[in-house]
Length: 245
Ligand code: PRT
Ligand code: MG
Image (tube, rainbow, N blue to C red; front, side):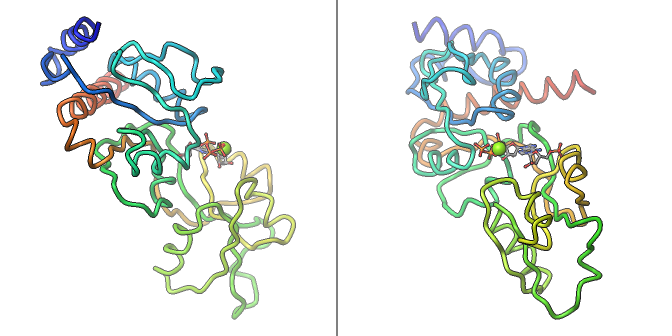
């Protein structure tokens, strides 16, 4: 079974990649962690182009470990913030996770070999359109509501600004409206959530997209299989970008 699926993968991409049939012929098992929702929705076409298709619908299945068309590859469906934790600890070999989540992750043990260019957005500072921070009495410490505590700390520390960070787990946009904070640090895509809540983006902190991450020990111990997956996904990204251009 392994051999048949592996040969299929090798053949399908032989024109584009150095991935060899041999590298996947009798492979160790590999797990790839990812989250439901937008990352999963946008990652599936890339995984599919790499020959990895889940045998169940990730968004609706109650199973958290899902078989794929490649016998040796399983998908783990977990919370976005848990992806670097699973991969960093070796509970998953690979993961697909937003740069925003990676910037917050304070653990080690990860390589970040490939930007998949999906689930793109920007991490921004936003404030009330009707109460700009610039018009606030000076000398008062800014209160920043965010789920990106570490990234916000780093951003203001780099500017030499002392701020109070208020950690929230969601609905950041509400905080300035109800007087909990002066600003928020949050993800912005179209800007319509900010606009709907009377907020405007005032500073850009980082561009965000989802990256492939790899456990460092897996990269060593399962080198051929892991680099084969990286190669297949890199080809899928290049092919997508080429046809979109
Ligand atoms: O939802 P849950 O608490 O389980 O986890 P999560 O919120 O971390 O996961 P999810 O699925 O909501 O987001 C996963 C990842 O998607 C994030 O970590 C980002 O890397 C990426 N991503 C890309 C986004 C957005 N774009 C995005 N726009 N994540 C969230 N948003 C939200 C944003 O927080 C804000 O509330 O969408 C709103 C802004 O969108 P616009 O279009 O109105 O500007
Ligand atoms: Mg969410």
